[in-house]
Figure 1 (cartoon, helix red, strand yellow):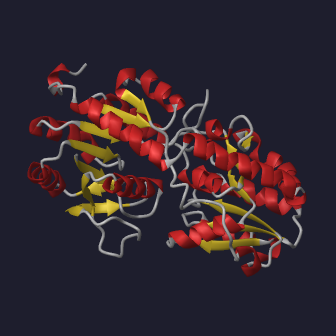
Figure 2 (cartoon, rainbow, N blue to C red):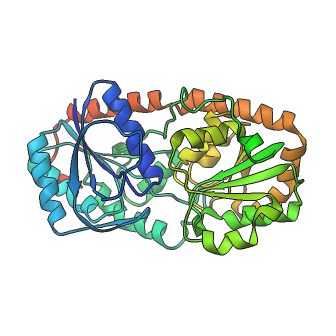
Figure 3 (cartoon, rainbow, N blue to C red):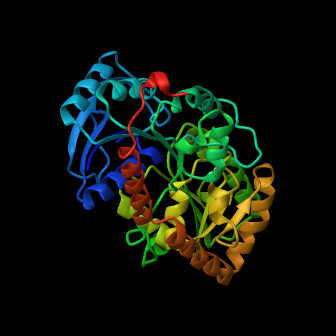
Length: 382
């Protein structure tokens, strides 16, 4: 099958990881993949497959959104005409191109599938103001023009359906992890940081990640000197937080770690993974930590609470994250038998529900389903 994949290669974020892992897996299954993305002059992340690439010109690009040039639409249209794919799959990048893609694919008679990553607050909760709320309000009326929309959980499917997207066009295909790569194993990280017990946060240092609640809880819990908290990632809040939560409290800021093997080594050496976010989609970082056998604590936002339900981890309430962590951090420190058990349950949950292999198989089935249906003109799509 020939697949034109439209996504991101940089800057590093969950969308980038999703595109890299899925396109690698599709190539392994002998599909032909062309990757169309907003090119960036600096070096790209490693571990990318060797496929045909098309560079789309842009004015600005960040982890959150992208502004293309006026020429980008023409480049995209000409490229798809030349590639002649069986299906176009857009891992939506919060770009104006997302809204014109259906019209382009309609003109070229190409089936179009979208993966909608935008995070949300969770069960019964209102979306927070800002980027997430705006994205849902903007996208919902346009997603009906895609042949299928992939989301990561039933909760997100119901949310989009309430906003007017037809349920039959929404497919739930959770994120998946390569469980042979992300697996328990040996690591020298504890020795490196002189830690008996090692806790990890991995993600953006941004307001929606609620990392200050974790930092304050750690500081107030007066964790022992043999326990360390590693902060892996970068973002706009890092300069304002790092000076107040440093080595003296057992907190180590590693910044963005580009090397995937190094990130795996960190996870394998840690005991507990913590994700105190206010909004999520389905965190790949959480699934990677679970696959490596860490005990996981995460808030009930997006699909993360669903991932950890029924004993696969500890689910936190967004309204009481700091107070809950003040209690749970010392418990996780002092009871290694508890975190070992939680880590075993976490890995088993990933093996049961969230493997990359199952993810790609579902994706292949979706492609075949869409290809068997005659695409309707935009004018007939209600």
